[in-house]
Image 1 (cartoon, rainbow, N blue to C red):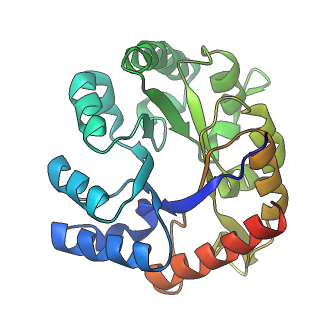
Image 2 (image 1 turned 135 degrees about the vertical axis):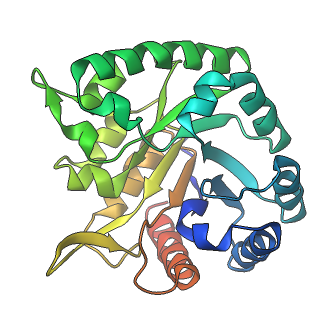
Length: 258
């Protein structure tokens, strides 16, 4: 039976309001008031994880995933796992491949090897390693896109994906095609709209750009994506106002494509 994805927020969008415990509590209250109960944690703190867990419980938030520092995940995996258990989150992700690995085939090969080690450690703890794309993963080595290499040259259980609609479009591919390519390996999808300005492509609120997010939603629904979260790197209006508008419009997309 096809299930509708749960809708939520990537906290990176609101990172300027997450620097202290008090500000984070106010931000969680705001999200709760506009109806958001699902979050992906990124750009928060530094705040002790016990305090984050207290806020998650207080505001009844479901933490669908995180983005954390890659070196911490690789070098201190057990601590990272323990921190995620505090917030009842089993998808541990990175926001990008470290720059050290991005620009050579040798670097990519090293990253692929490390992914296997990390992914197996997390799987043994009943957790999942996830990878969020930008546009550079659409570059090619020997006729293959980096994103395709990540999908095809890793074990499915070792690495799942948090695909980003804006960056896929920016990189020159059809987001719907890649959502289908990631079927069975994507719990979370980032919805981010895309507009053209005099300065070129730019971020904009959900439903106000030219991305076919209705088709992206249907693809997520058809492929079993569990969560769609709003992320906007830069907001021309206030970040909270932007999130509220995007969430309203995303709910309308979901309603007409259910």
